[in-house]
Length: 281
Image (cartoon, rainbow, N blue to C red; front, top):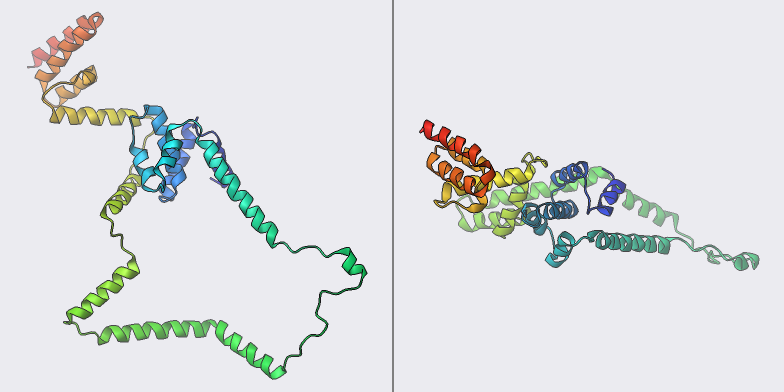
């Protein structure tokens, strides 16, 4: 995907297609710290689920410096205007900087008057001084000399590390502090956990067509394991079949009875399922 294609996706972000969602997911996996794909996916998820699903919203919030800005992008129908305004401002700023760097054309009057922009007198340079300056410049830009200096610095560091006694606790603490500073470890455990969550999601196989079904199935599975009371929102034939597979036939029978009351026009059908289940018991 090039920049023009990505801009086209932003321009109709209120009506994304499945192919565009797949492209945004690839951008999310390839560039995990790129915020805009996460925001667009969070908005699509919010619109499709009516604000019930918030998986992508969590990942977008991790990389968002302004939560109010993120909320306006996700929950309103015009995030394009905000992004377009920022893109236009950045483009104008680049054009302004580029035009400022262009040299001004020479005036015709100055050419007619014969006035030259060159100085009247050019200072003479001593050939010996010029040769010495070129020699110093060549030594400075010599790649072999640069590599030699780097190797010398590495050797000095190794010698310094050898001088530190193995059993000296202060020396070990100094080395450990240097390693921490070089690696720039993340001290905020909460932020680290959020980043790990994003990386873990990048490795998962995401199927857009069945995203909502998988989420509902997971919720039903958790409720069947942790709750002893049936929730009216979960009363369905598929949930009863799930309980039968788990060996919870008494709860499945209770669901069939409630379905007979909830859908009286299908009472004969649910009665047959209930009788078949009692025969198995």
